[in-house]
Image 1 (spheres, rainbow, N blue to C red):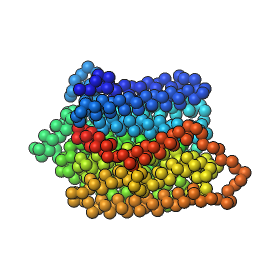
Image 2: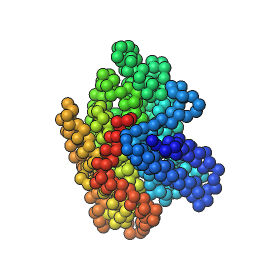
Image 3: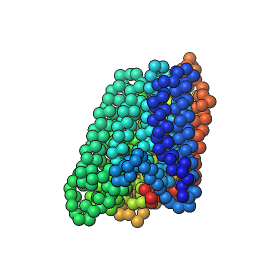
Image 4: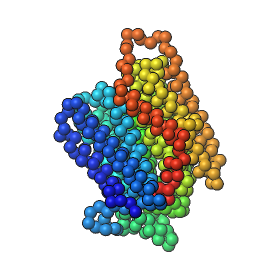
Length: 501
């Protein structure tokens, strides 16, 4: 049995992040106190997640538990649910968020006005709370509430950088996010009308009964299509992803790292829970939504990379690469098997670690080039900021699927999950084509930063990377190689978590 302290960790984690968001505006601005508080809170949440994961795995069995919120029991009360999968996702989300903050401290000071930094910390804590809530909640309406909190905070951390470009990008992001949220809310209303429940397991029982009697199949199909489309918009699944490059490419380095690496993944994991826990994989197959998701995943893998090939701005290139990587995740979900879901969750973790490292590295190289973001302007910047250069090279090799790097592990798991499945030919062809396309834009970027620039402006002296930047990048690199070299224990743990999802 799990101990009483670990039983309360999901609620404590969400509550800590919410309380930090409330008290941050009351803190003095000197000595980076709001930023330090946010980092410490996220670090503690990460340690709590590690303890929860230990407690769940140490029990000797694959288990999950429900945490009742309030005095009302199911099916009327609100619940959090935690298992090995939720715990491991919370662990990686927390430390990736922490490293994104600490690795970009100096750029945050340059890009955000002093009177806005406290607000920025409030938004970061709200994002952390919403990610945890989307991961742990067992109530579909609570998920919607935190989707909205996530939307407001995510759009605001784009707009916090004062410039016309970011204002336009944030407005476009907000409009698309609200469209997605509206579709999700309509779907929840339909599902509540059909089932009479908001807790996921109770909804699942009611939906299974409706499908068994072939009742209300069309309303069920419509609700599934609406909630899938809404979360696909918020997850930047192609062709709903045209808002993403502007939002991620024009915001601060911290915002880009968090938005691409973490915010998108919270919505994807919620969709996985709805597929697995609310409808069930058999119903998803009956309603043909797995085929739709699979096709869109294939399309995203190719078109995201095609658009990335056309970019001359390094951050926009990495942003379009995120669209391609989201396609990998939806490919695994579209397989509609436990192995496919587990492979998708592994790629969520890989992307949550690698993409923030890429944006942090791109920010360091841009600073070394005099705050220029064009790819050709980064020529020779590896020698001005070796840590950023190593981060970009490692992240590029990971996204290409080179062995020993994190991306290879998740792509291999997706390949293995495709075996014994009718779509294996399409899966393998898309994986191979996308990897080649990844190489076509990442390899030139690596060559550019490694090429000495004889015409570099000698009057500009690149600032050396800070100690905190070096530590953060070292941790990013360590996580990347850990995922690339020792992924099998983690994949087994994820598989156990999927089995009790």
